[in-house]
Length: 137
Image (cartoon, rainbow, N blue to C red; front, side):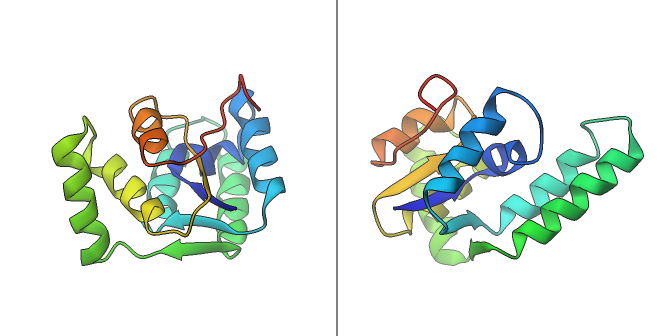
């Protein structure tokens, strides 16, 4: 089993809320964590918009960067972008979501895909990924 995380899944690792426990449990089940190269960039951008406590934001940013060293990064290369284009032509996805899913689709199965994006969930399931949710833990 491989755990692939999109930005919502990766960010949930560091923020309180119902998705936090789901993400931690998925990551606890397998030490092989993977994400597209885009996840770190998106996460760092979103962190600045999530709160008004600069010290807390800085601490989370440090934790994100420290933990990123443990992630197997799937490159966003031409192969990934071509697969994203295929997914985007056939599924109602934003480009960024198609890139995350295309990156995960390169991984050996079985894959647990951690996302909390409602547009990605049905596509991830159609690709054969297990998708944990707050209701399924």
